[in-house]
Length: 206
Image 1 (tube, helix red, strand yellow):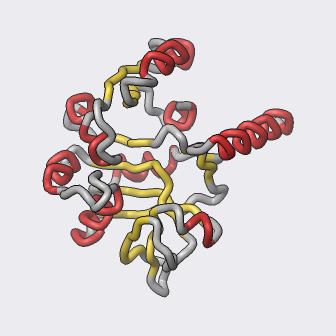
Image 2 (cartoon, helix red, strand yellow; image 1 turned 120 degrees about the vertical axis):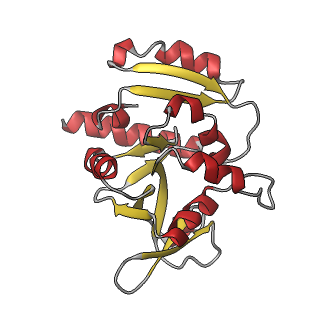
């Protein structure tokens, strides 16, 4: 939430499943305590990230927008990337960060050429083609909703965000930005413990 607000984004839609939405609303409320306006929508079934992004179609109201996974903690400001996307002509932008080989096996990974340009994406590869992982922060134009309609579910029955990346890459309409300070994933209980310790240390440093 703070990452989006720092980037100048004050109108924020929070999407969650029905089991957690009440607790999230109770925690965050209208957003006035954070100097932003919060709207809530329920994703009735877990259909993958593109399915969740599609829930935001009417909220986006025909404008460019940023989608961010709730379990991603970004250490640095994304404001420069958001500004570049707002002023640029690309249809999609993703953020990359360097990870270990084991972490890459559990993530979406960007394949790079010898000049460092992205030439492909793969989801949870057994043998990663790079150690540059795609974090859960994506930027799109409203055209993305039409693209999502064309996606087919994967073997696990969900729409895959990697398929969306590859669509834009083939069109030459995707740009990737590399984070300098990385990010923290908080998708498991162990990761939640680690990120709380990390953030506590950061607060003490400041």
